Length: 207
Image 1: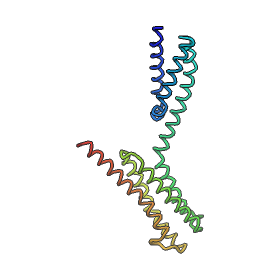
Image 2 (image 1 turned 90 degrees about the vertical axis):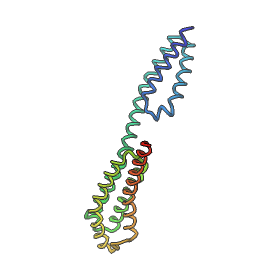
Image 3 (image 1 turned 90 degrees about the horizontal axis):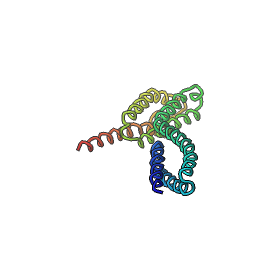
Image 4 (image 1 turned 180 degrees about the vertical axis):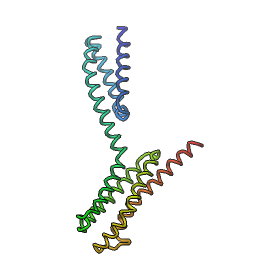
């Protein structure tokens, strides 16, 4: 009987070591309940069969831990990749739609041209919104993406103005133009916010 607490404590430590291999978010949400459930199962297994009971429990537990560990790590990697590269994907999508609006099909069809310019502008707004939620330490990448966006649109906007005149739309301030410019310049505003947050944080840490 004296060996029971020791073997149960050792099993608990080994299981907790496996739990540390799970993604942090999974550990925060499920780590303690999983550890508590395993402790209860260890007590039941010990009561039912001592070492043989614990051995059977581990033989059932290890394959399940290995399977869920791989699944959760893959899911965490996918989530991180999506979140990390989502602003870049939106940048690419916005520029692709903008350049597609300059294709012959769009140039000869007012509704298609308007639809593509609106879709491109919405992608730009989405990029700005996602970057607003990103950590301030990523300000360098945010600035880089914003520079690429503004550089490309410096070439696209004059062509859009020319096409709008062709379709009889005003070349100056108009609802579509205001829509495009507002969503476009949301990006440098967000970039400025992130730069300010970064330097304010560094200034606070130095005090």
